[in-house]
Image (cartoon, rainbow over all chains, first blue to last red; front, side, top):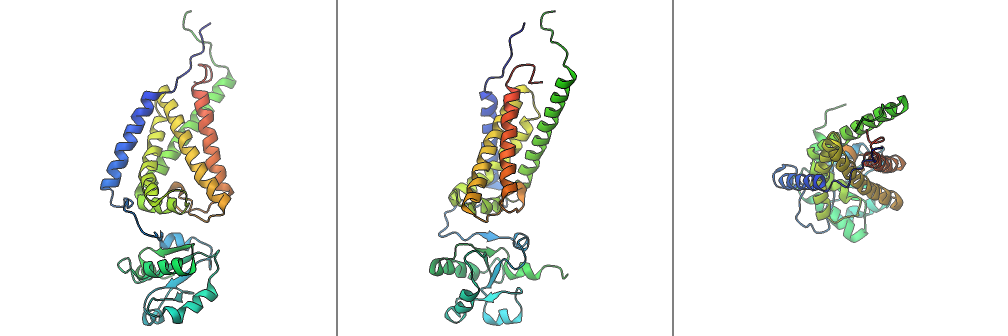
Length: 149
Length: 153
């Protein structure tokens, strides 16, 4: 009777796969237009896409508008609270009333070119210890570009 | 006759066909998953950071490595016997990694984006079960592939 044949651990095949994955990964990190950043960020605030935010249950997200008050008054995401650095002390009580540590907070400003949302998010994280916080990728420009229902 | 093997019984043929279909399904799943993640590695890195298990640099590294690892696993599972064995081992490693991330997030009550299959999904029992199921399937596949010649057809 022929003895049972078994396959030993295929080290050479695994080495080939590891080499392929390593080379492909390095090329991706170098050339991919959407490659992640390897540069260390201080107190990294994650970004959330509009699609990901809208996929959450309705009313779960606490939207924070970091734009100047005049732009907030003109138009804003429904339910958003205005909290800009210029009017921080005046607007903060409204945020504190609405905030729940279990509720994710998403901060937005005009577009991906502005930094106000990042600044407000970092300040909320630093001064109030808000952990579940992100900035909206593309900002108000992304929201307003949505087709009308 | 020297080298001749006995014909497979109907039960063995059914088992072999089932395993072939499972292997092909798993391979296609990994190929699709890797391709979807490669569309936006930066978004996948953000999802990995939300698990709070690795540093931002680690998340960025995993975001470029994991998709290619999935693609390589999928391709290997379509190959010859030694390639399939390597594919099953690579799938087990992926399953271990996914399970650690998902179970850790579930245990800590984190509401992180699943980062599964390139889209967003909430962490919960389904994601945990899926990760453990894939790990179990890969382990069973490797055991079957590297067992005796009767079971590894």
